[in-house]
Image (tube, rainbow, N blue to C red; front, side, top):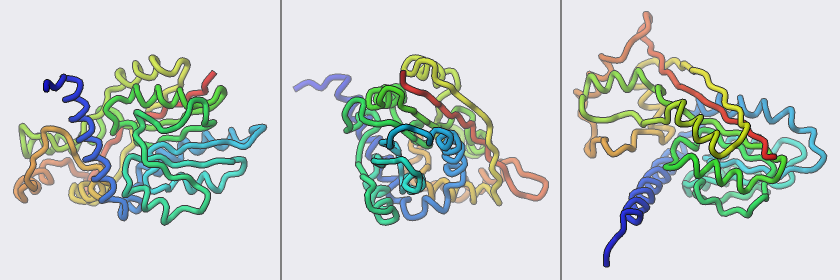
Length: 273
C-alpha cells in the first residue's frame, strides 16, 4: 500500500499537535503563575470586549485555546453571556480548567483548525496566544469565520517574528547549528493571511519588553508555560550545562545584571458582516 505525500504531512502534523498538547498538559499546574505575557495580551483584548457589552441579546462566547481557563473564568463574571465554552487541544490543560472553573462552562477538547462546532453558532470568539502554535493559522481564521454568527466578533492575539530575539541570538552564539527558540510568522505573512480570510479586519502590533532576573529565569518561565522549543532542529538530548552557561554569558545584560526579553505582539479584531 502506497502512502501519499499528504498522508505523510498529516502524520507529521498530528505528531506535532500531540507533542504540543502533551507539553502544555505537563505545564498545566505551573502555567497560570508564569503567564505574565499571556495576561497582558488577553487583558488588552478584554478592554475591547467591555465596550461591546451593550448587546440586545445574551451572548454565546468561545475561548479558543483557553488553556487553564484564566480568561474563561473572567468571562463567566460578565453579564449577558448565556453560553460560555473553552476549547483547547490539551486534555491536561482542560482538566486544570475544570478544577478551577465554575459550573456551567463547557470544556471541549478540540483542534482549532477543525472546530467541533456548527456554522454560525457563536457571537464572540476570544483567542489569546494560541494561533501561533497552529500549523495553518489561515485554517484557524477560516474556522472562526465559519462558526461566527453575522455581526459576531473575533479577537485574536499572537506573536510575530522577532519574539525572543535576544534569546535566539544568545543560543546561536552558544550552540550554532541548533535551534532553541520557536519560529513565529512574519508581520507580512500574518497580514496576508488575515486579509485572505477576514475582510476589513484590524491588526494592531507593538513590541513588549519584559524584565527577568537572568536568562535562566526566562528559560524557567518558558518551561512553566509549556512554551519550550518544539521545532525539528531541537536537540533530542538534554542541553549540556556548558552550553547553557555559554548562552547565559552571551545574553545581553542590563547595567544591574538583569535581562530583557522582547515579544513582537499582534492583535486581530474582526466583526463578521
